[in-house]
Amino acid sequence: MKKDSLKIIIISFLAGTISGFFSSGGGMLLVPFFTHILKLDEVKARGTSVFCIVFFVVTSSIFYFGKKYVDYNLGLKCAMGGIIGAFIGSKLLMKIDKKYLKIFFIIFLLYSGIRIL
Image (cartoon, rainbow, N blue to C red; front, side, top):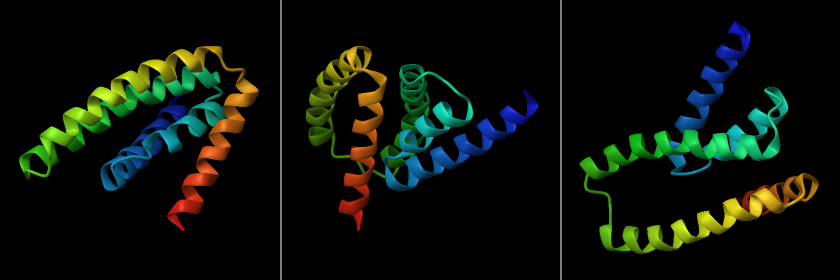
């Protein structure tokens, strides 16, 4: 268990750093780590990832709020749409076959990587 604890601390540090630096992306690191290294079920890995990210976001937000880097009007409008999207997405996650979930995630990662290039 100690070996897993060290892995968790290292990957969490990396995911938090990526999340803080890029303002997203921590889940792209956490989900594969949870599923492939810690052998969590796909749905549980995604749920755990979202739970972890809440803390990353709160920590990063404190910095952004303090530096006045937040457009509250735009942020609230996006939050409303995001809450609805998160609700629908989490409901769909429970219904989609794990095989298709993996395929969708791979396509999303490839698309994101190509767009960045």
